Image (cartoon, rainbow, N blue to C red):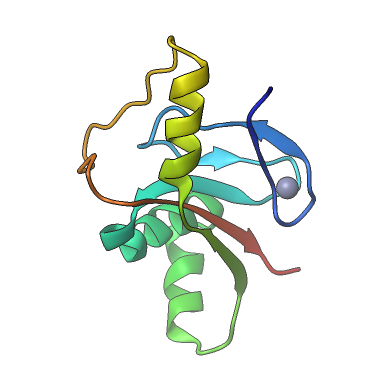
Length: 112
Ligand SMILES: [Zn+2]
């Protein structure tokens, strides 16, 4: 059994992210990151800063329009637990995160 995550925008599969501090990129332009449930806003800013330059971001934040699509997958920790049961070598990095908190997978894609 192979566990993967699926991009909600283009449906391509990716390995489960191991480094929870990194923002990952999908080939369709979406970015995703693991974040703890009590820190979603900060993580969204972190992901957005990978997609847009500071100037663009400041402009976009100032306008009220919706400029990106966001998908939040809850219960990501369940997937991590399952993965750990199947693969003893699987060692996710929990550096800044409370490992007792719930984990979410946040996807952001720039609107065309
Ligand atoms: Zn994608």
